[in-house]
Length: 220
Image (cartoon, rainbow, N blue to C red; front, side, top):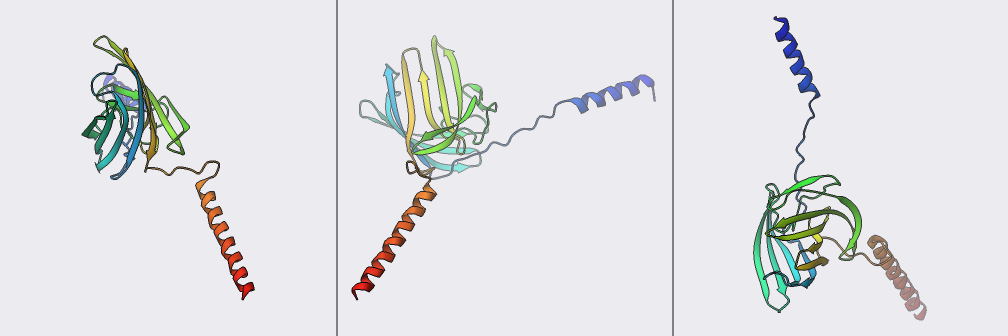
């Protein structure tokens, strides 16, 4: 074999062997049909038409692979209602207003949003929502478009990928959204783990039954 050819082949082998291996992470869908979540919304300033929302609810109508169909109901500040069906696809980054993102991401991970490009998870922490302590992922989006600058910090539940809080600042208004009710997890009894609480209830009920039994037996 020609010496130069052999040297070239050897160099290519070394380069291929030393190249970083990129593994595409599987997109995890954390919601299922029948899940729902409700939000309280406050705003200041003058939001554009359709954004003067005071309350909203999102129902998961169907989940097929990476496709999710949502039914979103929003109450406006003037008392009117806005209802719409929203189609999401986590694989291609069709996320609406980042209602739902891939579940179980960690700090430093990124996901694709067709509207904003790649969004990086900036932190993972424990926070309390809808009466329970949850592991939460957060990320921030900043953008300037048509002389309007805005920034939104999002918080998503890690296990489900569902939005639980959003804090948006625009040039002319600000909006704050936070969940207060959902069926995706159970509210915890203040100061007690739910398992401990139910164990105590059962124990107290058993004691009352035993006391009643002896009282009735003594009377007889």
